[in-house]
Length: 114
Image (cartoon, rainbow, N blue to C red; front, side):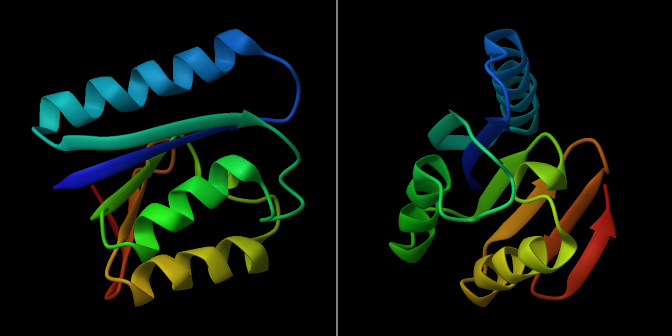
């Protein structure tokens, strides 16, 4: 399984970004996943137009990713409709979204707990 990490904070909280990345890396390594990319950024969750998220999207569209790992689904976006549109983009390309805090995996067949 090829995974890409995405970490985001709204405010300049460097430790929080580091903590998110460390948790996702640890999980991926324990699961035996291949880490193909990671990005983190400071930015508002009120838009999907963010440079770090764009890097994830480019890797997805290029077919380089099987799963995107995030600390929480709200790292994608603050409002549900926005999150859902991004989840739809991922699943349309057969890419799963794993959300650690919620213990959910979104895939083309829906969402399941892990």
